[in-house]
Each structure stands twice: as C-alpha cells, then as structure tokens.
Length: 188
Image (cartoon, one colour):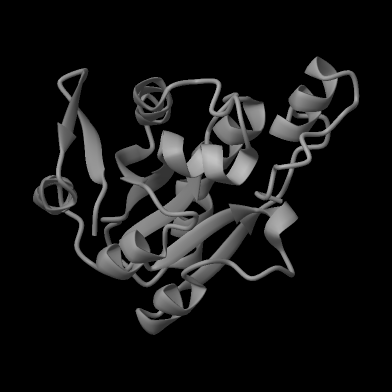
C-alpha cells in the first residue's frame, strides 16, 4: 500500500512509512486488534473534527471493559491532497496535507496518522486491523468503510453523537459560498 504515516515524538512531527508508524505504536504498548481508527479529509479543520478526535478514545474504552489496562491507540487516516481533489473538486484541499496532518497529531489522543491516497482508506484499515472504527453520528445507517475488518477482530463501529451547533465543513463552505454547495463534492 502506498501512503505514509506520521507521529509526534518529543513535540516534533516525524514522517514515517506505515510499517515504521505501526512499530512505534506497538513499542508504546498497543498491538494489532487494540487500535481505534477514524478518518477524514480534515480540510477546514473545525470544532466537529476536534470533538470526534476527543470523543473517539473515551467512547471506545467504555466499550471494552474486559481489559485490565487500556492499551488502545487512536490512529487517524487523513486523505492525501490528490484524494481530496478527486472527492471535492477543484480548489480543494484548502489546507495543505502537511498542515492537516500536524493539526490532527496535536490532539493528545492521537497516536499516529496514516495518509492514504485512494478515495477510501480500506487498504490502510486492512493492514492496521483496528478493533474499533469511530465515525460521527451522521454516518449511522450508512456503509462504513472497513466495518467488516473491525468486526473480524471482535470490535465494530462506534458513532460519536454530533454536538448541535458545532461547525461542520458543509456549514463553513455554505457560509463562504453564500449558500451554494460545490456540486463536485462526493464526500457526503
């Protein structure tokens, strides 16, 4: 699989291959089957993104009360610039990849970031084999990419409740464009 990973080490972002990223996470106490996964474009980073990242680890730990000590790690998939341009159309992303990766890594619950170049992160999910996939409640009732992989390792999908008036990318975009939506945006 193409793509790469990134971690924060001593306050600095370190780029790595996916295999190096997994090795670092495993050295910190996690193993395959104990990874929490979420993903997104994270372009126009907003409060809804922050809420998802902060809620992901807390919600998933509640689901697995059988562990005497928690060794979960939150790994976040981030679409590459090329992937976003294909999904959302010309002029996107607005925020360059390296900045989006850094913003995600700055959240204390994130152990690492995987950048993927396809429209979906299924290749990364198959390699990482997360126990839980965390998505916003707006995905409930829809097909979640990789759900079957998480179920194979004894987990599944957890939906984080949306917080009413928190900003969303579509709300920000509508405000900037005066209510007009980008007709090429295939991400919803």
